[in-house]
Amino acid sequence: MHRTTITTVASAVALTLTGLSMAHANTLRWASAGDSLTLDPHAQNEGPTHTLAHQMYEPLLQRDMAGDIIPALATSWAVTDDPNVWRFTLREGVKFHDGAEFNADDVVFSINRTRTPTSAMKELLTSVVDVQKVDDFTVDLITDGPNPLLPVNLTNLFMMDEGWATANAVEVPQDFDNGGDNYAVRNVNGTGAYKLSSRVIDEKTILVANTEYWGKDEFPNEITEIVYTPIQSAGTRVAALLSGEVDFIQDVPVQDLARVDGTDSLRVNSAPQNRTIFFGLNVGDDDLVNDDVEGKNPFGDVRVRQAMNMAINRAAIKRVVMRDQSQPTGIIMPPFVTGWTEALDALPEGDIDAAKALMADAGYADGFTVTLNCPNDRYVNDEAICQAAVGMFAQIGININLDAKPKAQHFPLIANKETDFYMLGWGVPTFDSEYIFNFLVHTTTDTRGSWNGTRFSNAEVDEMIVSLGSEVDLEKRANTVASIWDVIQSEVIYLPIHHQVLNWGLAENLEFPVQPEDQPHFKFLTYAK
Image (cartoon, rainbow, N blue to C red; front, side):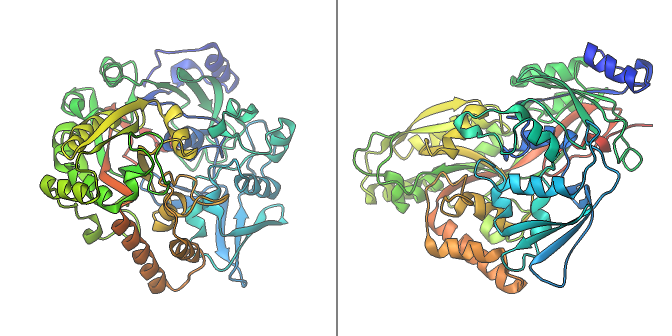
């Protein structure tokens, strides 16, 4: 039996109340590089934030550890006789952590909350024009035209208790990017397998098993307590795993893979991730704020962007920085996604002389200086990738001032368009190109383009993106997707680097396959028999 070495008064009390003795408690000690940004379930569309939320909140549908969609708070879903209406049958007998009953009113509230301006998830519901309660356990989502892919947009849209939200004045999501705050940022009342016991931001979060969980007989649910500790330092994180202080880390540094996998009590589970890492460029503004070129925008010239794309030595980044733990690419779309092709994935030609010639043709033979904003606690070797790119861009005369900071400070720069050149990684939970287009390509509006830090705007492309939400002719839809990618690739508004590879490090007695979205749903975890 796996025993904990970390105990708290709160968790001990919780276990006593559930009738469990510590001798029968299974505590999982989990660590990763960065903490959840917020506990408000609709305030941030960010992987680690969703990861923690998934333990406590639940969507109508979710993806399992293989990445397949399974029922969660909805037991069935289908288009009605009206092709613009999706009907969801809700699971009965579900209770929130405070004992309140889950029903259709909570779904209507949660969907509407997700559609509000401060929500980071609103792009997922751009086709939804209304949500209606049919009865206590039936809800209709009405779309602006048929949307055959609506269900895949719901796997990270968490359901809240309307009564709890109203009582605590959290009817609208936290305005994260502008420093907003609310009760839901630090408190949780979900329906999930685990309850929040205690939390100190960036230090430790403790969850305890929800003994009233509706799925206690449908999932293994072998973990009774989760102690989550964000550890930014790669060396410290690995040392904690090697010493047995933690049982599971999501992000084994590539330089330590052999060391961890070679330790008798540990192993590494690896798999490709549904995520691509890339640089974004401000191509839309007339002048950049963070460069030394006065009165114009060097990124506004496609020849400069083409030169930069050619200057990135992706093979060297894979070999030296990533220790072969990456898949170099020429597109910001992971291979999991509908629309991906080998031709689109092909790497740009690496030719420094040709890149210099393009720079000269654009009027920048002597180069220029610009700031590159980079996170240092979000992606695998994120800052190291940026450091490597600094030298590569210098070969064509672009001098980089590297500004690396934690993701909590980095992401608002993109959302508020305060950066001209930045690193971003993008996963695609819908496994469809429309998700990328809605967030990263569409002109920024109240409902789309919230992560389009490039300022790229093309009315024809916008129209094509919107059409995808209601196109039922799959061949026509595929052609539209291909046309949009043609524009993105020819305009070079993003500089792709690689598809990320996941390496989970865990105690050998844990049975836990890598999930392609890097979402460890701990209710699925089992102990080796």
